[in-house]
Amino acid sequence: MGKQHNKIIKRSRRKEYLKRKKDQVKATIALKKSTPAKKTAKKAAKKSAVKKTAVKKTAAKKTAVKKTAAKKAVKKTAAKKTAKKAAKKAAPKKED
Image (cartoon, rainbow, N blue to C red; front, side, top):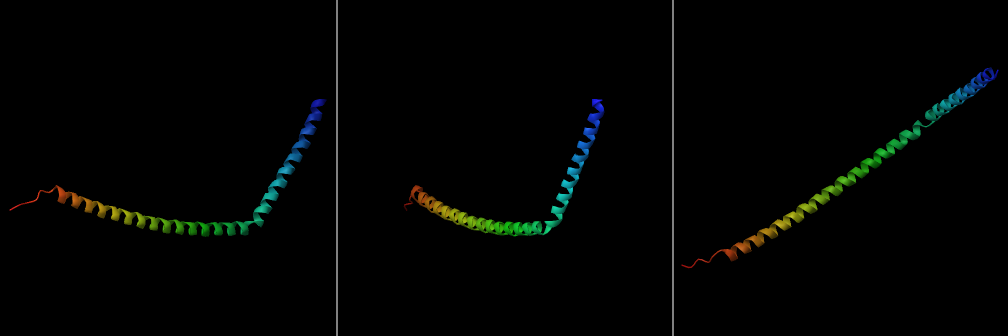
């Protein structure tokens, strides 16, 4: 007789479980319908923020490239000058 009783309990528990799940699904659908405006606003804000940071990064990279190019140019000219001085010292003097 206990088995028959268990079947009834199982059925009622399953009905309650399915009812809870349906209610949960309905609640999520209602939330999704009410929040699209917020999501699009957030997405737009994120895109504009990303664009601003990208512009800042590219500007920073350009200035960094200019600085490094200037440093390299200074180093090259300094190296050329020292090379010329060394060549003058090393070259034997011609006497006629």
